[in-house]
Image (cartoon, rainbow, N blue to C red; front, side, top):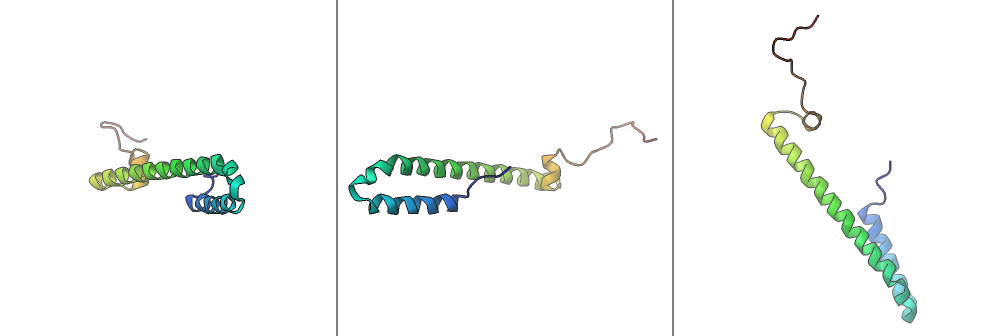
Length: 88
């Protein structure tokens, strides 16, 4: 599954669209809804990226406290034996 375009790619598209809006003069107003839509999508992507970063930080901080790796803490840590259980 693809994560879609990067924020940098979307910013490049917005720059190009801004140039087009200015280049067409008075008819540029027709492209304003597309410009605003793309700005909103960029902002949404930034919010998601910030949330993912906060989540990653939280998991890493917890892993440091308990001495596990990030991957292990995400999966629930290393498996521990139940008291009184034996392997055969």
